[in-house]
Amino acid sequence: MADDLGYADVSCYGQRDYTTPNVDRLAIEGLRFTQGYANSAVCSATRTALATGRYQYRLPVGLEEPINASSPRNIGLPPSHPTLPSLLKKAGYSTALVGKWHLGYLPDFSPLKSGYDQFFGIFGGAADYFNHGADALRTGAESSQLHEQEVPIERHGYMTNLLGDRAVQTVEGFAKSKEPFLLSLHFTAPHWPWEGPDDEAESKRIRNIFHRDGGTQKTYATMLQSLDVNIGRVLQALDASGLAGNTIVVFTSDNGGERFSKTWPFSGMKTELLEGGIRVPTIVRWPGRIAAGSVSEQVTITMDWVPTLLAAAGTAPDAAYPSDGEDLGPIITGRAAPHSRRLYWRYKAGSQHAIRDGDWKYLRIAGNEFLFDVVRDPRERANLKDRQKDVFDRLKTDWETWNDTMLPERPRPAAYSNPGNFLADHYGVINPAPAAPPGNAPTR
Image 1 (cartoon, rainbow, N blue to C red):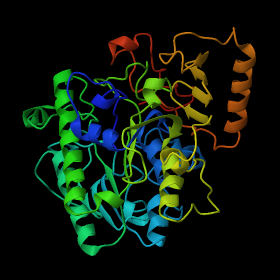
Image 2 (cartoon, helix red, strand yellow):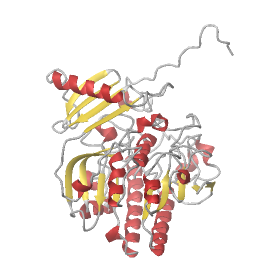
Image 3 (cartoon, helix red, strand yellow):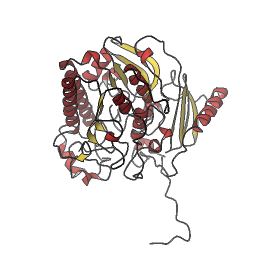
């Protein structure tokens, strides 16, 4: 899983400024979905769905958009909740997470408490690519330190390379043990800060991990190329160990692209329920089962991978926690034709609501409502809510009915991550002023 990858940030989805031959290799040897969605427009909410196979709004942790330094420390993925790794572990698989966890902090929450045998990575939502040791907090409370299992560690090097190193070692270890395995490789790239492999000087300069005064398209390209190289190293490790022929490889992103991403042909970005914030690259390779070079228009969503991978392993979700996703096995193996889906989203900042039903999409954002045919109009420009009022009314009602089955949004306010004073093309987007204290409140 990449972090904040735009739909067209890899060449097999339309990037032309640089190439990503290893991601392209997965598409050439497997199946590329053109209508793959993330469960959310932000990190930890999607990761909740990836772990549980359920709408993230069923759990308090999924209401954090995202978990950050201000989130209550008692919020995280409950160790008692079945997860993809815990269910595969019961089925005899060894499990490892390399990279980003972002589902709660120690001492109550951890990959090791939710089904993983091994963990090497970060607990939080972001890390500097070079300064990820004991001095990580120099760039703010959101900066994470590397951990081995549940112990903070110091490693020197570029984060993407370090995660690639550990992933290769993990594959080699599983090959020697001859045990079936799940490796969740959750890179931190291309999430900010904007630092390529040769940008250690920039790492030393910045004092804020959000890095709003840095980055260029060229830097972003080097970050993506490093990500692609390390994906290639893992694929080579599978080849060299003789595991490639019997290993399912899935590539996707946790949400749409950020400041320097290419999301064409869509509009919008991370934290927005426009297509650019939730439509993501989605590729799966399974030699001998998936026809090489396949392309599918089937609508998919992150939480589908839990029932899909469990079924491939000969098991199923816990009956007490049924998945909201569906087993994509018949689609990816060519045993079933694409079919219509109905998927739902919400996002507290901007009071955003969305439903995709067939080709139709209802969207509410910042108090404005829209109806789009996202197949014919992927940039979401032609608002059909008046021309197709019956469809608009039906989808809006369906969303409200679905929302009643989910947990209510968290009571704490949620600010826009990219208001107009941060991003020039978001002019007019203003975060509300903090509420004034009551008249009898003490002053300081």
